[in-house]
Image (cartoon, rainbow, N blue to C red; front, top):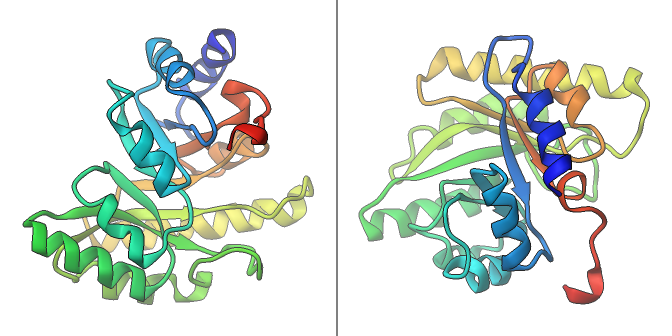
Length: 222
């Protein structure tokens, strides 16, 4: 793990072509607190969970990193995350945003979120269509209790750069448009273990890596 992280940090240290620092979020689904703390000791400052139950189980067992929620989020589980996240990446529909806003206001806090875009228009993935991204941003960025910090996307599972590059560039264009509209916009979370290098080359400034850090997951532990 330490060698993998050293290599990743070395690549990310160059930033992206827009001169921005690239933040590494270690995706810790199925990973033990001991594994996560090893990663933190090796330099990881941000960790992300995909499931609320795992987020809660590990919350008091892992120390020294900012907490992200990066998976699909059900409205009835929002209450377990309020006040505990640095960033919720996966706000993929208005109803979810409204529940985060309601509970944040009730708690007297503002929750930082990313708007999830379904960049490949895939039925298996949630998120707003790219062409609705700015309209969603316009609604959510003026919702009390929320602070929209940018966008998140997952690329389709293909190695064909003729497909992927235009999608990355479309996300970057959306990010730039939103950033011109609001000084709060800071993050474009795009890139996982199989495609992060391409995403950074095309403007991502936050990547979510699990397998690239920890190796293949053992889902029998999940």
